Image (tube, rainbow, N blue to C red; front, side, top):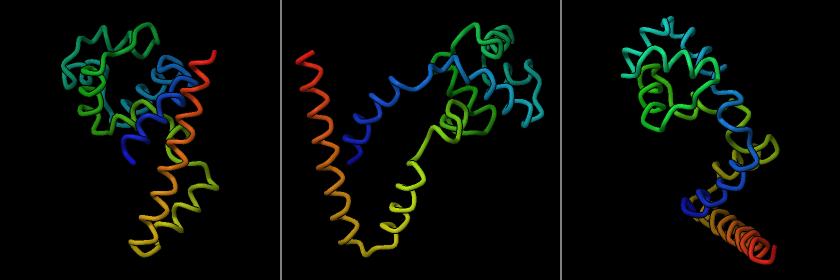
Length: 134
């Protein structure tokens, strides 16, 4: 399922707001929660303080390498740094269903995963066929 899940994330990411729309706010919040100055974060992440200022002002977007450095310096995951809590994970109704599945026997969980894999492949196939015909 991991390969299918990765593929399905791409269309969702395309419809999600760009990194620039909420990243500056998240960076400021997390930096302040960590009681770090812009200079301290820059030093810990291995970037110039002017870059931190640009990121927080929304005037620049960090590279993947810079994001990893920022996340490490702030002791958070990349998900926590980049995504709002509501942007990750299943919706509430699916969350309850996944919780119920997590309590099932191993064989039943494997069956549910296989069903999900099949539905994901079906969805991805429809998406690809739709992209070819447009």
